[in-house]
Length: 349
Image (cartoon, rainbow, N blue to C red; front, side, top):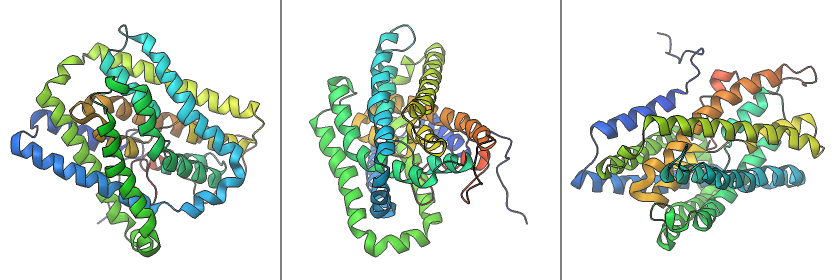
């Protein structure tokens, strides 16, 4: 029998459908009482294990080999952790017309999350850009984001971040940074095992994220915070995120040209500097926001699917540019590229 495949003509990432299904399950059957305690404990363990795997997978040597492209990496980091947050802060002026306070908090958190790794590589490859630079840029962003995202959240969200505090920063260190560093330290011994079983561990990634989503949205349902979000507000959020993505895509493309980068590097900068990682953002939000995580991650989930669909179209058009070089070996079609961006394979997306 032939293996069933996701129809290539459908632009929606199937994993996003699973995430939406998990949200629906949490809405219909939220965890309560003892069940909520069990789900919370399991979610905490899953987050720690998830970042342990990130540490075990990420080749520090691979990232350090890209230091010679320091101008490119600084440009990507500036887009990810400087320009994005500045735009998030500017969006505060849209309150209360388009966004309420909770949605703006989630949008601001979205702008603090690291860039993707795997989807940046896939789209850069498909567009015939500088794939090694995309690998290194995404790796640097992931490494820096483990530390910088919580610090930026402490500075920019403060007491308005759904209960963010010094205790939240300590939980970030214990649940995210410590397991990540443990994975890095043990990579010498377990890296081969992780690489050989990347497919199975990819399912662990996805299952862990689904558990985090279910726990966060269950807590939101029990707290009744979904009554705060109207269809009009959701429409406003989508419009704001569309503008945010368009601005970042334009700035990374034309700004890198003004800085003198060649076409292949500009492609890597555009795809690595304009996207945000759902795989990293969801666990961080769960730790930082607790019961308020459901509203905090909603902007990130919507932005994630939007960036995949838009970047797939852009990458396909870039691959047809007259000045495009030979097709890299990692090149993918848009449907495949849009399906690998959530914590699968050897690098998190």
